[in-house]
Structure formats: C-alpha cells, structure tokens
Image 1 (cartoon, rainbow, N blue to C red):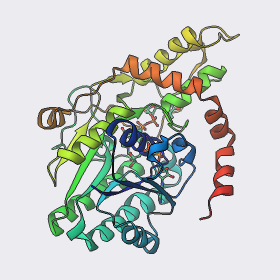
Image 2 (image 1 turned 90 degrees about the vertical axis):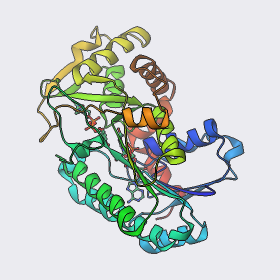
Image 3 (image 1 turned 180 degrees about the vertical axis):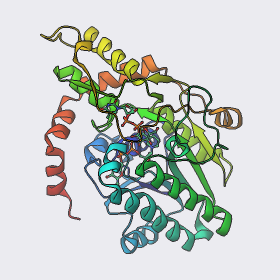
Image 4 (image 1 turned 45 degrees about the vertical axis):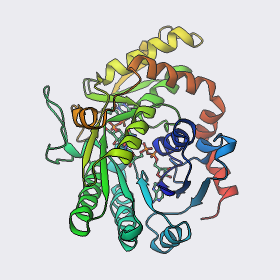
Length: 350
Ligand code: NAD
Ligand code: DAU
C-alpha cells in the first residue's frame, strides 16, 4: 500500500481516518485525498495533521464523478489502493434532493470502479465504506448480519445499496480485489452539525430547542468514529478480498436516551442555562418520512475473524465528543456561520 487514494477525506469519517493513519498507524505511504468540498467537506478538519505527515499528504479538490480528472489522479499518483468515503451522507437531505445522492453515491462510485478496473494489475484493494442503512429497518428483535437482504428505505440508503452492489459486481465479474464495510451510526470530532449528536450538543449548549423526531423511540447503534477507523484499517489489512464486514458498537440507544444523555453531560460540565435543566429544551417534532425504526449490527464476523473490538464505550466516547466541541468553538463558529466555505472559495478553485 504505497499510494492510497482516500475519497471524501475532508468529511467527518474520512478526516478522522486520515488522522488515524498518521497518528496511530504511522502510515508510511502517500495519502491522496480527493474531495470536492461540498457543504460537508471542510479542509480545516485536516489542518492539524502532524508536521511529519506533510510530505506524504496530498490534497486535490475534485469531484469523483469527473472521470477525466480522476483518471489523472489515478495515473499521476500511481494509485494502488482506494478507500472510498466520498458520499452525500445525510438522510434528511436525500429526501429533499435525491439527485445529488444518486449522482455522487452511485455514479461517483461507478467512475472510481471503472478507473480502478483499468489498472487491475496494479490494484491492491478497493475498500468501499458503506452503511447499515442498506438493510432497512428492524423491529424490536434481531440484528443485521452480512447475510441480511438489502431493503433500503431512503434515497440515501438506496443510493448506498446501489453502490455496494456495483462494488460486489466488480469483484465477481472482473476479479477486482474489494472489501466492503457496513457500519452503524458514528459520532465524534468533526461531525457536521446536521446529524443528531452534534446538532443536539450545540443546541443544548446554547439553550436552543432540541428537535426529536416522532416519539424519540427510534433506535440507533452508536460507534465512536476512531473505532470505525480502526475497523476499516483492520479490514483493509487483513479482510478477505470479496468479503463484506458489518461494523457496529453493540450500543443500541433510543434517540430520546441519546438526547437526555447529552443534556445531563452538558448540565454537568457546561455553564448553566437561564432556562434550567437542558432536558426542558426537548421538543418533539414531525417525524422523518420513511423513518427506519431500529438499527442493530451483529459484528461477530469482524470480531471473530479479524479480532476487532471497539475501544470506547458510549460514555467515554460521548465525553470525548462533547469535550471536542467545547474546546473547538472556532471550528463550530466557522461551520455554523458558513465562514468555512468562504475560506474554501478563497483557497481553492473548482
Ligand atoms: P460527510 O458528509 O461528513 O463527508 C462526505 C465527504 O465527501 C465530504 O468531505 C464531501 O465534500 C465529500 N464529497 C461529497 N460528494 C463528493 C464528490 N462528488 N466528489 C468528491 N468528494 C465528495 O460523510 P461521513 O459521515 O464522513 O460519511 C463518510 C462515508 O461513510 C459515507 O460513504 C457514508 O455513507 C458512510 N457512513 C457514514 C456513517 C455515519 O454515521 N456518518 C455511518 C456508516 C457509513
Ligand atoms: O446508520 C448509519 C447512518 O447513520 C449513516 O449511513 C448516515 O450517513 C448517517 O447520517 C446516520 O444516519 P441517521 O439518519 O441514523 O443519522 P441522523 O444523525 O440524521 O439521525 C439519527 C437519529 O436521530 C434518527 O433516528 C433521526 C433522529 N433525529 C435526527 C435529527 C437530525 C432526530 O430525532 N432529530 C434530529 O434533528
């Protein structure tokens, strides 16, 4: 693994993965981060990479759907490994603008697969990052395994399902060395504050209403982002080519439980609010259309075959996450005000 193409490396999980590579693994190859810097891409997420990584790290602002530019990236950097994060990732946005999701998640993945196919002889691995949402929703019992049939509910999850199928087809048809990981809900530093945990944390900090969809009883399985990064790296290193691995935290929580935990944590460590306890800010709002009731991941294949287990509990992960947002007020202000995008406009040309 000498020349690793990371797509979507300025987003939440991609940026955490690049930090992980340089800070925990001591990765000694080149990392070529291609990101088009949509609203979710923020180069500031990588501004504090260790000095020693500077020689190895290359950033290119480009759209993965642009076949000509991506062909140059593959050739110029002699790419031998792909770790594909780039996607439109937010379910609510996919309900309003599904076209962007089909474009990036399906067409973009297709472009990368075609370019990887052209250099099959040099390709070590195409690792595709996916989601547990491809499996649809669970009732009160059971958990998704790698054998669970796909049954996506939202345009987001349908587009991710389509991309998974394409990746698997390239493995079966062309013998491409691929691995796929389907992960549950991540949380941690640098997550864009449209997703539940950062949105609620920042609203609760400032005393704004805390919107909870429906009755708040929907269940998600939470995983600290560094644990996801370690799972991805483990699969890339030792996962069997052609295989899929489920990744999850064995950490099921109702949404209302998550929101109450955040309120209590902030009541403990943040300045008190004039309104009193933060739970009083909870506001039940109209439910998300097609809202999946419950996700739960059975990750025993990854545990048994590759020895991965999460290092963080929900309590320790949430403390680190809240600490990060409290100590990165500048990041928060620039993201909330949209100033980070002005910075992008000044520094990069599309
Ligand atoms: P994110 O929205 O924070 O980041 C996505 C990144 O992709 C951004 O930097 C964005 O600029 C970039 N991007 C979008 N369209 C692009 C394009 N056409 N060309 C180049 N770059 C583009 O997303 P995330 O939460 O970090 O998710 C990363 C991956 O992990 C996605 O594939 C997502 O489906 C998957 N995933 C996310 C979670 C989660 O809980 N966040 C869980 C499981 C799987
Ligand atoms: O399961 C993995 C998926 O997790 C990833 O593939 C997606 O990229 C990621 O966005 C996430 O999807 P969710 O829809 O589960 O995450 P979100 O943070 O948007 O919502 C979590 C739960 O909280 C969900 O049941 C909806 C609810 N919710 C969300 C928001 C933004 C609220 O109740 N209020 C809110 O304001």
